[in-house]
Image (tube, rainbow, N blue to C red):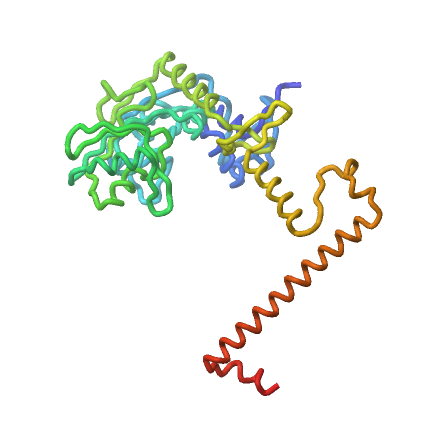
Length: 355
């Protein structure tokens, strides 16, 4: 029996898109296997199965292609556009007949370096937030850039409820700065500068990891070398492993970050790590229960009160007494409040006087 693999993995190896994008394509009902439409991403397929994408038969790419494109401004990173705007992929289609897709995105008005490939695994590793691959941008503005904005952006800034943070920056002039991001979000740089009413003239991506724009003119491209591809993948995998708290849960296709408490301590007689706040809570609970008039014991077998006749009845009496005192104090409070309001002459309390 031939080896089977998940449908989204097969599509990614065929060069349709990244795995995550392939899952969306499958859910839209655009994929059929052996003449039947499939909408479940986890469906297993093999080399003997016939797979169609939008009615066209597809197969695994015989050779992976990795390209570095210098995208000009006013080019869209998409495979289609209803407004008929120029597409970045059209700069490559005259040379390459294989199905290619962009790795990540650049805004319509943003220029610079972007990758194109038919390798879905490569695209997933490069674009996943956990990899934290560096991306360097040049930002040119109409107004002077305040230093405090860059410092705040480096430590972390909220803009309209969205959190942005850069890794580092370097001023090239009063209106020009180079910024390094590890997790670029949609229009992140423009949003940060517009939050201070600073008009942005140009956003230009200079570098992705170890690959730069050197020698690539606007609208042109070149193939990535095997060394560059291996360095990018190695950098992505090493940074994903170095991040603390990353755990892959069963049944999920993404990584979730679990926040760990900073004040974790391990006692000599303790087998597992317990945050200090849990210990403080348990001690406060014991103290509060003792103060309320009834005994608290963590070990019922060694509890001496269980051996004393009538111990449980005594605890029950103390609980009831506390409830009675509490209800009595609430009643006194309501009477005092009523007398205060009555003295002020509020009409809504007149109905109580008639009774």
